Image 1 (cartoon, rainbow, N blue to C red):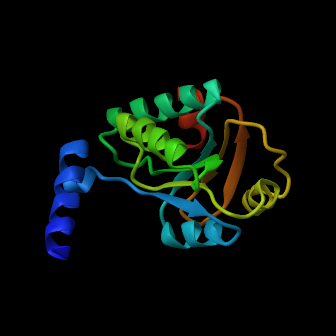
Image 2 (spheres, rainbow, N blue to C red; image 1 turned 120 degrees about the horizontal axis):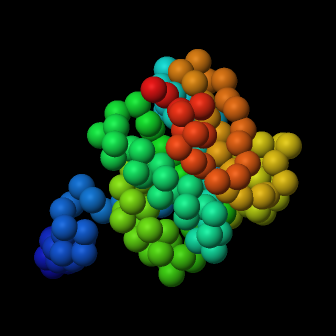
Length: 162
């Protein structure tokens, strides 16, 4: 019976996403998560985008990154997202997944976990006060530059890998 339910669940995922590989996961971002993210990207440039579902400017930033990523055919623009929405809210998680999947940005997605939002913001950047959109452009050596405001093609040209 257990095998049947696992197979049924797999079929539901397949029907909802179109393929098993498209089923994305929103991971809980906790105070130690940034270190894990940076370690996982060692030697590769990437942009870390902090956003939320209710931030209109964040949606523009995500759209611009998606378009640039499509132009580059996914090469040289590694995008990691952190939503300040709760990873404990199933409805919000579903909306985050839908938004990121529609833009092709669901590959490495996080949302605020159980710690206090202030603690999580501090873990990302002690100098950050919560304004969004916020992005961090990491080079291959791990050095980063913070950017507040909408990510435009000029922002990507200036900070993004070419």
